[in-house]
Length: 188
Image (cartoon, rainbow, N blue to C red; front, side, top):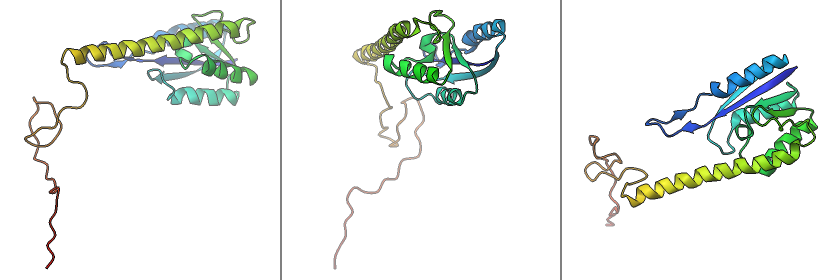
């Protein structure tokens, strides 16, 4: 049987230069589980932080609906979706209607072929959405704290010397040549 392994990694902003987390942390246990089951696999790796703009996820759903594989194996429900209860249930139900199951490695109860899966799925999808909101709240709080401490957020100010936006430590560019604000037309 052929199954899809889906891994989604977020941007790790705790480092000096933000970079995506390593998807192998999710893929290795997924591969091992699939191998023990004797499943053939196809891997989908999404590098995205939350939200609904996930082209790899959309491609996987499309291929699942075309029955290219019988199931989707994820590391945990929050890697599959944090879009809230209704959206997550919609994805799983629409896949189930086509005969494609979804299984979570960490949440053993989440096997869309099981009897209590929908009840538990609704609860955990809500928790995943709640966690996404907490992350957003923490980000806003950190930005507010920086702003209160006098840290300027956003684009650099426009340089009075050259007219370009850049940090004060950078060298000025050639002055911008801007047309005059008012042009005078003389009638004779």
